[in-house]
Length: 231
Image (cartoon, rainbow, N blue to C red; front, top):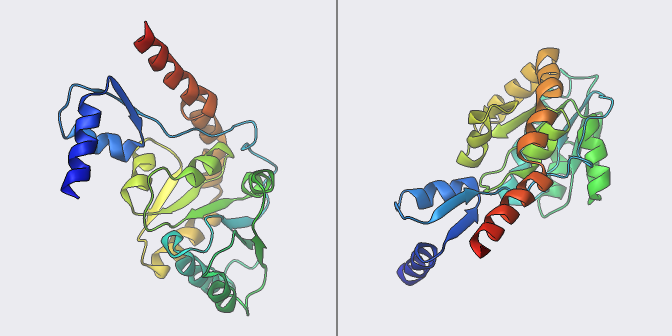
């Protein structure tokens, strides 16, 4: 509403410093206020999300709500079942579209639905994966991408602004048309069968996250600004 928009803008204008997701900060910058603006992405626990010995798995870990676009993943996995016979497809999480995803993949081999799992279990799966899929229709801070990159795993992600941000930042992320099963299938096949993508993610990904998006790094930035304002 106009009232809410006015309240938000006035609150930010009267603030000394504002932290928020990159896309929100970019939007606020258009208002040309004098407020100090800082990007914050919460951060990744790199002591948990880190590379493991890689196996031939392709992982979807967003869950089965409509916003996470699971059916395009299920249809892509179905189309690749005979082509990528030596890969296992793992789908994590739960939600209303899980049953339909299971139906689509019911005749496919090497498919596993994990249901809800702990962060430690997820980190183990992502750390061993050769590829992670992040197909969301909308997002602000796609932590799945950062968790995968911290684990030395390349990512195929939907063409939404929040994901493009990480491509621009040099992370090992490849974009696909969020509505296209064919495009997703093509990108999965290309990356899964070309070891250069995995090697690049292993060599560069963990260091990029550790230096820039580790939760301790992000916390120190926030803490520093906070104590500067108190002085």
